[in-house]
Length: 267
Image (cartoon, rainbow, N blue to C red; front, side, top):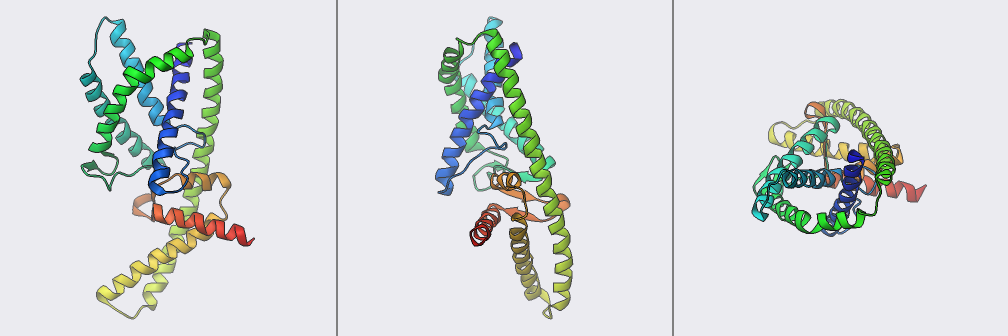
């Protein structure tokens, strides 16, 4: 029951995190953004951070300790930075994709974390500990031990299926990218042989042709993807192929989606 109870809290905070991310990103991009790593309306990183803080507070109070608001703030800043950086690194290592990028923000580390957002998460930690946690405890106090077990097992099954579907979709996307990389290499070899200019002019033409081919080829490939793979693609903000391979920005990804909708309208 203990694990199931924390799993229920994890889902609650993951859902609240999804709401926050969706609202912020929709405002930023001025279009509907269904945020998160998984298909369902949850952002696991928020649930992990919130439940981690709840467990830490429980351990402190049960052992007769106390905490202060500034202590919560500092721990939340440091904890969120470690959690974001490690999660970003793991997702990029396994899926070669990025779901957030702070490169445009000041005082960022490899685009994975940045001081402004870490400070914001520090403030959020204070709100969670002093406001949200008591509210969550209050609205869940009616749940019986067996209720936690049933809900926990149900959530575990749903999240497990979601993770499996997401991983499968991203694996398919990686296959498309690998094919595109091979096609790109072949195309660029022919293009270089056909270009007469030398020096900087040739370099510029090569870069232009590389980006043009990447966008056109992958835009066509998007139509052949499964709906789940396209859904996974829409949630990325960037992609870097293996061993320095093909790189895609968010503008490329948005362009793929536009091209796909255009093909659907014509068919």
